[in-house]
Length: 306
Image (tube, rainbow, N blue to C red):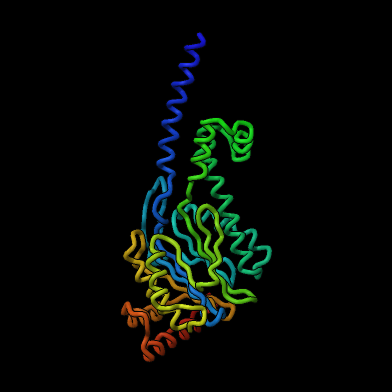
């Protein structure tokens, strides 16, 4: 009788191990989240420029990628703070929704505090996804109950397998926060497994599958925080165009400027000026600089505050 019971549990454990192995494969780190988001500080911290494509990715059950022309992926967090995310649209929206209550308490708080609120929302959402996808289906336990099980039975092979799944779980979602507070412009990224990374030294950053291409282009343009607004707008636009060769990066562009405590988005005329100057080279001629500056000023006057 005892041998039959043991054999029964062995067969159940074998099936469970097969499920665990499949989950390890499905939750292992993959390529960077699709799309691209770019941010750069300029004018010695007085302004910032943010750009993104318009490609959005929906997970199951739709499993769809689309690029609506009217979509804006650059999201207002406050009147002086913007956010861009790459990866699953549903995960990004959940993280933003979880951030808003902490921001609403003090909209003019330091950008570092806003970025920390985004990180905290990321961590909370990631924990919820782990519970939904791993802990509840396999153990019927939430995160706190799982921690208690680990503390009680740390040597359990099953719990160690589950712990491996938890540690490997990746939302495949990155976020970039850019804004201006009383101390100047700041850029932060929030990435797996919930790290908050300040980008004060470089003065620019990028997320998504096109991040490497965008970062290389900004490096070739020798961008620093001391760059002029016109040069920064051009370099960020060129960085976005360079990133379009990466998988999942759309051809349409969204671009916003944070300056003088206000935010404005580039309109069609502004993009025409940028496209006219586009040549995949690191520098603008004086005439091109003047043309882009004129388009920037006109756009600011028409659209601010957007």
